[in-house]
Length: 430
Image (cartoon, rainbow, N blue to C red; front, side, top):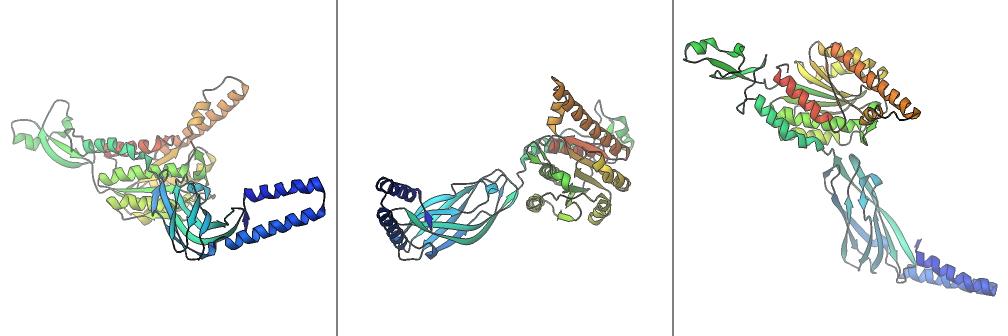
């Protein structure tokens, strides 16, 4: 049973004559009246247990988008149900208007719609639906909670896809699909054309020139069908929030943009999310299926509050490919002590693979170094400078071990990693 605010007011109204008269008999009479009112209300109210529920949910939505969750209520009882319905979504589902007034005559059906705007990635679940059926006076209600499971998968938003068109245009230039032809050591031969001023003389094809009246140069295109292996660190450091976004979400955004770009370039992309065990893996996908599998695999993964096992990463990469590959390590390098495992493992990877370490940096740290108006700000600036120095030292150590480093704020890291991929492609290192 549930009571309404009107019932509370009714009780308070009855206290006034009791206080004024001081007669115990008045109190007994008033209590008897209230009991009768409650019994009549509950008897006349429709039964919430006589309602049959059905749920309709969207299969998946992107983080930040909205969708409608609909619950259909069919009154199988003999009395009209007048009351409220609450669809029990967690706060992270961003449910609006999850309490609705309904009037369901006997034998009829009504739909209750709840708009969901989730602000967390993963599976958002609703376990039950609660119905309150009030009597004609609306003083008390019969209440029933029914288990009605359902979930919505909230996918990564892929906000970085806005950078894809400009990177694809640069990729077409590298690939020889525009008038710009790029020559790079270790790239594949594409075609022959006449020499123009500014061409590298090393690209002159002397045999073709001997058969022609003009100088002829070779044009080149980036090699295709290369392997790109993305390893995302899902350990404790990936749980930190930078600009109100977890590090792991920024890593996912970077992986999605790079995967979309690399698959257009004809390269094969694989993903492994790992800390001490594999949390998610995408291997062997291509074309339009690649990004779908990426976002589906990423959606339910949350950071684990354990240390990353870097010693297992070389074996993990070998399980994906035995050929030379571009290996992207999405992790954190802002703490020198926490990167000892990474630095100790790196030579095993760089002996065979081209390794790029991708790490999120906090823009507020850089801003803090500029504020030195008082003593407190000076101390904060000194701490921020020390943090930036640690990042520089770790980055220098990674480069000495044969790797490359890409850092940036959450909004800047995905395009920066894509630019690194294009630069390696243009230089013929991939």
